[in-house]
Amino acid sequence: CPLPPLPPTRTRAPRKTASAFAPTVHLPHTIPPPAPLRALTAPTVARPPQRPASSRFSLRLSLLGACTLFVAFAVAATAPRACLSPLVRTAVTKNEAIMRKRVAWVDSLHGAIHHGGSRNKRLIKKNKYVQLATTAPDGRPRCRTVVFRGFLTDSKRYGECAMTFITDGRSKKILDLKENPMAEVCFWISGVSMQFRVSGKMHVLSAESGDDEALRIRQDMWQRLPEHTTAYCAWPSPGLPITASPPGDSKGSVSETEESNASKRFKSLAGQLSGGTPGPVETASPGETDGSPSSSRKAHNNFVVLILEPDEVDHLRLGTNQARWAHTLREDGSWHVTECTP
Image 1 (tube, rainbow, N blue to C red):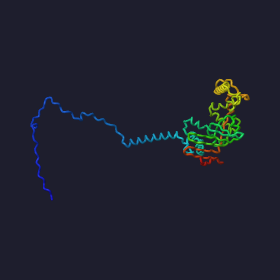
Image 2: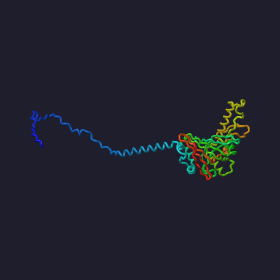
Image 3: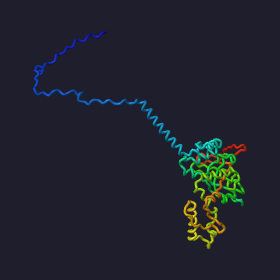
Image 4: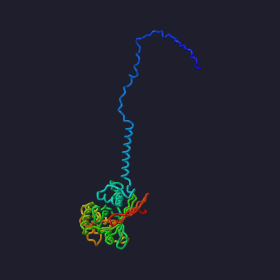
């Protein structure tokens, strides 16, 4: 059922006070009302338009990507790239690039030698020191350290993978190679923990070589090397004793005077080779008429280029990811690769 209506409410009129009936009085020194607050505030300066949030995020993302690419290229330039795979791609000359695409071990060796970057010349020079092993005429093995001078890529006679070295024609290794031309060189590159054993036939290119191509290769190598590198070919014969007394002889022990004389001989010889004032040089042994030739012609006659024509290569990689590959040269000139146990 509907509710009954509420009774009407009565409103009371406000009570009049005394101030309501008081007249308004204006004093002569009345302080005017304060100015509006909005007029006292400094005017607002217009701000430049801001980029939206999406645009700022894209800019930060692009900067982060550029920094990431820079760090990646820096790491790739200094990291041991050759330890990841036997095939390493780096930029070289046109002939060598073609050879590296065909021969896997050449590509691996080049990448291992230059693993620190092409600007690190000291490390590259260190990686080119190799051990050369030969067999003496009496059957004794002989091993010594030589410098790898690069691949011979412009000759068809010695193959596309021919390796070059230099030596003195009076050294014992020349006698060993005349009896047995088979030799082996061993690379150990500690930066990537890799070993390369390259074996094959060693060719000796001397001043007596009658082949025109051999003489051209020898002359090109002579002109490419600096003078201080080939100056040792003008020294006395390698392995020649400085004193006539055998080692261990009490009567022939090296005294301070003999040691000083030997030092003077080599200092005088160094001065002649560098173009200084020639001085009196003693002979290295009684049987040698000219023990210290200073002319470039005599040094050029003793200069010999060794060319290794490889037919077997053993590539070993140590470390956490050990592996080993055996490369064998076929009759058609191609290389057969076999993965072996390290």
